[in-house]
Length: 90
Image 1 (cartoon, rainbow, N blue to C red):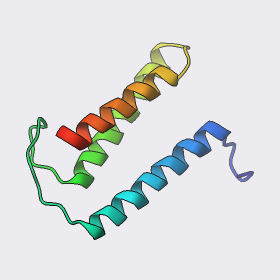
Image 2 (image 1 turned 45 degrees about the vertical axis):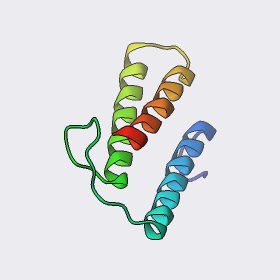
Image 3 (image 1 turned 180 degrees about the vertical axis):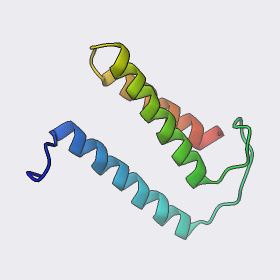
Image 4 (image 1 turned 120 degrees about the vertical axis):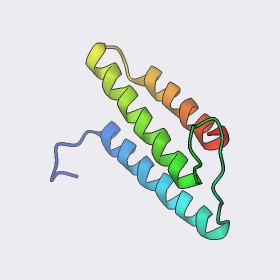
């Protein structure tokens, strides 16, 4: 990882996103899903809900980093909970 100025948390973050994508792809190949409508105002598939969950989490982290100097553990916890809610009931 010396080719970029990556820190260990950034490397873990992107590795985790990669692992999530691989797992979701394998799950989709094993058990294809159909669109459904949850609390989100559109019909979505598993991949759509994953993308929406990750996108909102990224914006939440950017807002948190921009507005405070506190530790990122709080937004990480909130993002994990948010992603679980969106994947289950979104």
